[in-house]
Structures are given as structure tokens and as C-alpha cells.
Length: 79
Image 1 (tube, rainbow, N blue to C red):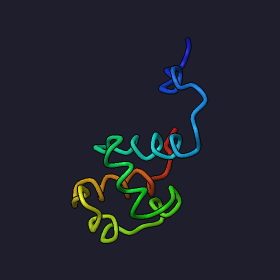
Image 2 (image 1 turned 30 degrees about the vertical axis):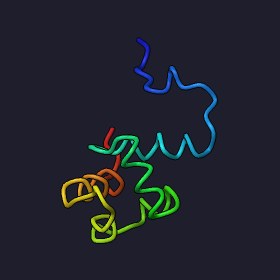
Image 3 (image 1 turned 90 degrees about the vertical axis):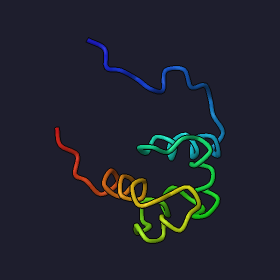
Image 4 (image 1 turned 90 degrees about the horizontal axis):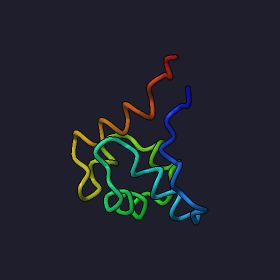
């Protein structure tokens, strides 16, 4: 059985495109919001490390999306 790969159709992307793609994979975050979040926080690492209050200050990111980003980034992987 082959595992599903969401990356199957992605060609060689620039670093900027890869960052935008990665951030857009957070729940309820599309490409446009991903760009906005990256513009405000500067890096994927800063997004992961940001607290909910910092995330909520970004236009388009409310309590729900901030909570989902933190839940996904802070939860232990269960296999």
C-alpha cells in the first residue's frame, strides 16, 4: 500500500514558496493568509514559537485559527 503524498505534484519550489506552502497547511490557513502570517512574523520558526496572543494580532488570524496553529504545533505525534 502506498501512503498518500500531498507533495506529489509539487515541482522544485523556491524557499519562499516552500515556506508559504508549509504555513498554508495549518488548519484554516490558505495561501493568502500564510503569506500575511509570514510577512508579520518573518519565519516558520517564529510562527511555531509565537503565542496565541501574538498570532491573534495578525489580520485574518482570530482566536480559532491561532488556537488551531498552537494545537497542531504543540501536540505530541501519536502513532
